[in-house]
Image (cartoon, rainbow, N blue to C red; front, top):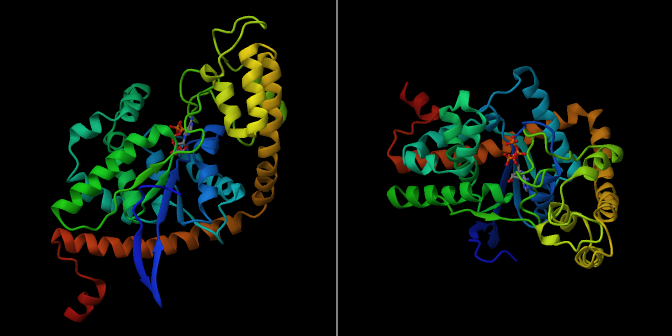
Length: 353
Ligand code: AQP
């Protein structure tokens, strides 16, 4: 199904089974929007029946910009809660918080020592965020993709389902893995980005990327009325000025959102209707509203239910983190050996006494 993905072969019990691991993350930086959902989360859900999937609320990434300290813990739990409500249930995958597994930052330090500064300076996201946060262009902001490489590689994940904005970072993860393997020892796979059907949703202005920290999004938990208020004014094909002008759906962000929520048959009708001007932008948006509500309402209902079960959410995070930590520790053991570090264990220290 995913051509070109390197399968790791593991011996298990009676024979050899093929496994591949999926890793991806989301920042607890605010309300999850439909870009996050169709660009990443919905794809994550699809993969849980196919692979060993690990999903992470990346709180250490979220502190690379100014943030409300008193809200971070709640945002982290809320983000995890939404992931579970979307279908990332503990029976099928692991959902945990990045800072609960300190090996991520440990490996990031090691990767820092093999990553040229120039590679980080040329990252598009760094350049954009540095412009957005002129007063706080800190090392963490620049180092973001190195920590991301560590997040992925500590689990030896081969598949990373992300939105288009993250592809450059995954390429860098590949380079880091390659460099580490050739300089020290082959430990890491070269991970590949996996894009969804709608990997780049623009904001309501139809210009910049839909983003949690820009006020240009539709949140996945918004009520129908609020979605409609936003959709109504969302920019479409700017060349289509009057109702009887023929439009170009491929220049229209609303149509891109349609591709993520609407079944093919209806989508074709919308496309033809727009091209021939037999439907107007408001007609098109009304259909989209219906399709979005159909998909998002059940998620909102599950979120409401889980809000009454915060203890359960915390337990899921705790158990997942424990499992992830076991994997991460094993990788770090290999890494330390490969680097020629002393690599003494607590057990060894006790023997030495
Ligand atoms: N507009 C988008 N279209 C498609 N996919 C998107 N993603 C984000 N925005 C879009 C994907 O969602 C996943 C989680 O994103 P993130 O939280 O790690 O950070 P981000 O990419 O920086 O997302 P935001 O919403 O823009 O957050 P802020 O405003 O905090 O920077 C990723 O796989 C991402 O590609």
